[in-house]
Length: 356
Ligand code: CP3
Image 1 (cartoon, rainbow, N blue to C red):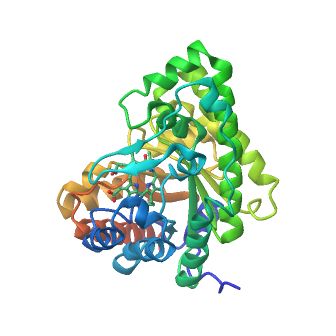
Image 2 (cartoon, rainbow, N blue to C red):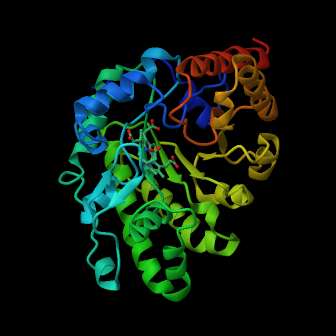
């Protein structure tokens, strides 16, 4: 049995309940900007060596919480564990992006894909969730996560990172049935993966759709949002996941917030290209919002960081339903001291905003 939560601000905000101050966590909070992360990664030998070892994964998940007053922990892993478990052979060269040894090249490659075994190839992820939950001892909630089917497919078809993921886009126009076949097996896999994380102890679930913003409105609906909505619906039918809030984050897709708010999710992540006041109007109080400071602001000095953090808090206002975050992941060159400035300012000003 896990002990009761000592800090439930994050979960309360996701449920749009009143909170004493605005909860805050940072995308990629366990990462290369922390010297202790770099040291553990060195010991692990590689990124996958780190992610696949539950003790290492637990250690780096907790590192940012030892430094900063964060209101949530996020499982240390990667969105590309699913394609890796499907046999695509994932690796990360030091300082470079992901690479698949066996990218999808044909209809036969796609027909061969099957939902991975959550107690087999992906058991290391569930073991990490169980261990982190135990080590957190109720301090803050643990977020589980996965990539969206669209974003996973981008990497699986391209074989690596890309500026435009034109290979998958071409498939959507030339062979839409094949693209849907791929997205469907991914939606089933992500649903099973998030349900297994919920069973292992995750307390909120987030879907990262990093490349949804590459699509125009109709293709976004057809190839990205539809499959995320399918995942949300599947989780609502799962005994462990049904109570957990789901956060959908489509980067660069602020034009679609209203539609996304109808997916059944609890919250939407937003990048920094939209004002939170406008985003709040777009979703009409149906969901909470998570975001949206430009990560580049963490390269500025403390006074600028404080001012810009307050601007984000002011744009949302004192209403319930805001989780403070960056609009995308923190970058490696950020001074960890700047993260402390940010987290503390969010809590201080978040209290003032509520007149406490
Ligand atoms: O937020 C957290 O602290 C949890 C850990 C986490 C990682 N990746 C660890 C990681 C999460 C939530 C992710 C998600 C992820 N992975 C996304 C979606 C979010 C986003 O940033 O858009 C994507 C697109 C990936 C795929 C991926 N993994 C890329 C493109 C890269 C290389 C780019 C980079 O930042 O180095 C990774 C590697 C990766 N995943 C690192 C970390 C800490 C850096 C690897 C290293 O230590 O060398």
